[in-house]
Image (tube, rainbow, N blue to C red; front, side, top):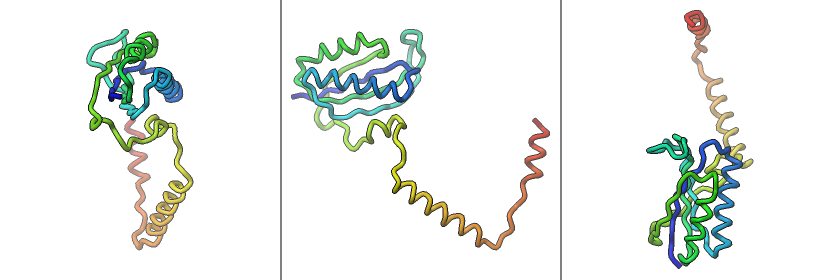
Length: 154
């Protein structure tokens, strides 16, 4: 099997949940054709070099996979017929070009929440910083008068 990557651009108005569904449907279509996913890297919303379907921006997704190459035409045809995909390009890559150690798709799309361990450690660091400021000998500075002046200027 050979390694390929497809860079595709999807409609920028897709929300994170719908974008994830689209990415998973593209991945599923590849799996039904006998391919194997290597990496999915969401680049995010970028300005296009030229307008595509009157869109100036698009969500860029890099999809790397392993396939025998015979079904790539069918895979590309599926992208062509997807109304949310503005453009795509599939190229052959070397095995060394496959991305590793990427975050999970939910993390890339901002859908995941912090684990309880992360929350606990952030609370501990907040508590320690609060205790340090409370034990400080310096008096707190009153900036309320400067805020009042700023509001009057508006």
